[in-house]
Image 1 (spheres, helix red, strand yellow):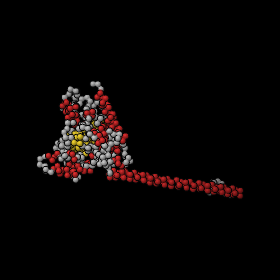
Image 2: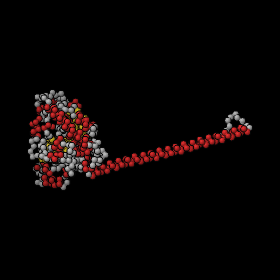
Image 3: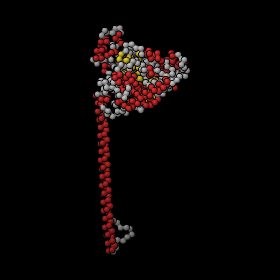
Image 4: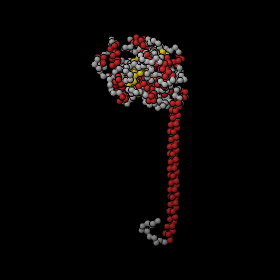
Length: 479
């Protein structure tokens, strides 16, 4: 160590002794210092090592967790595709999304819909739950009639909790005045108005609404959109042995064996209708993704496909156990049209059809009519569709008088209710409930599977009962 400046190195022995002891103390201090440094360095090395080891363990744990979740999902998906007939047969924990309003498997796309309503609160819960499950429907624009006496908003808010995006429009949202008096938005409406005029106004309003709705959904990049009413349900066109020969077999020039050949193609499974997925978990979107909208029109590729429409009358089933079959005991089948009413008109006496439209290809044109909205861009030459030609059909329910009648101005009335129920040669049809092969589940079972039983009860049966009571109060009020 260098001596301080200005101090002499030539000192006596006492100075030498003092310097020697100082050096000794300094060396000891340095030893202590080095010891502390070594200890601190050792601690630092241990901390760094432990941190590195912990990070690796965390990373390995996370990777293991992700792999475990992935494995569980793949196993559930494989199990579903292997045996998707009855969702209840797989137990209460057969998928990680159960009860959350999320599809239990990836679907290729979801549907949208344009819907006009007037005091249809009793019908809405079933209509929404059914199409949520079967299509699956996730986007909906609703035109509420200005003459409505009921408010559908609480119902729509409830369905928003399971992922449905619902927008309500008034006439101000879409109406464009036409040339005729009844085509004006502010056309005065009274009880003295002629029914024919009111029907014309209804059709004009329907066309204006559909046009604006399809344009809006087009701008949102939606695709297949359903154009049906609250008493109509898009269903698979399942083959029924009671349906008889196809309607075209009665045409001139058809082979005598036409009906026999068709029945044979159904039995041996070569006809497209024989290949429709009959499980309650099947969706329209999956069918379209795998096979196209309809094999009958695959070579046509039009953005509008028209389906046959068939009337289900108000006749009750004689077998109460049959309509209750496959349901949890807390559900009452008589509160669901698709489960309660099984008697329909023969498939040879179809109504004007209804359609689905790929709005991504909508060109903004005015509508031809609500049954064949895009004219020559729709399949077929008119709105009538042969019963055996397509993969889907529309079931049209008359329902009970309590659900058919409307308060205030009702251009339909009791006479139309009776007329629609006056159908000859009724056929019992058990296809709409979407029974599994074991008969232990229906479309409603699948809805429960998707959102949970308590939620399903709340969104269907409980809303229906509440709205029936409200409507009954309305009818009982003194006029």
